[in-house]
Image 1 (cartoon, one colour):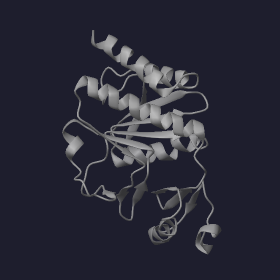
Image 2 (cartoon, rainbow, N blue to C red):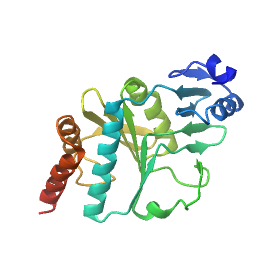
Image 3 (tube, rainbow, N blue to C red):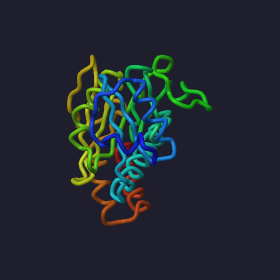
Image 4 (cartoon, rainbow, N blue to C red):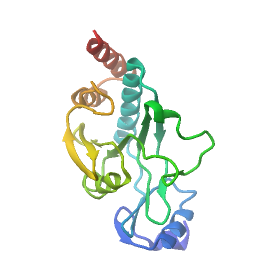
Length: 216
């Protein structure tokens, strides 16, 4: 780890110019870390990813993709991808989705998704084990300003999902997805709870039965 990295506090927001932020993330290229920039502050998340975090990450991606598939909704999911407004905002959400006509909006071969060229994702999901309050607070404000349509925070400790619909740079709690109509947040929470006791393939079978019942 470089001298620059060891001098920077992590897992907290610190005041920094965009230039200092770029230098910090350049030094993180060989590290497993997430980085954010918002309102003249940067946050570098260096905490190791826990088993529970990784498990919920997989279950949520599977559930959303399965639902979209059954409903015939075009979907492109992105895992820990950088979205950037150069000099202003930067984020690496755990999961993001472009839906319907936007599913093909970003061409293959794209590196960082530049939001002065491409639209913000329809759905952003953060998996929160140690960062819950920040995900519900500062990051929610960041995604409101970026123009994300919907934002979910997965509370790993409690197997809960706090979901928000975003409009006009504000947000409100929802119990059913608006970008994926018919997808109840309670079903996803039950899937997370079941994943504590059974394999992910068994959870997948249960989700399939639930989604097919909704169609009947």
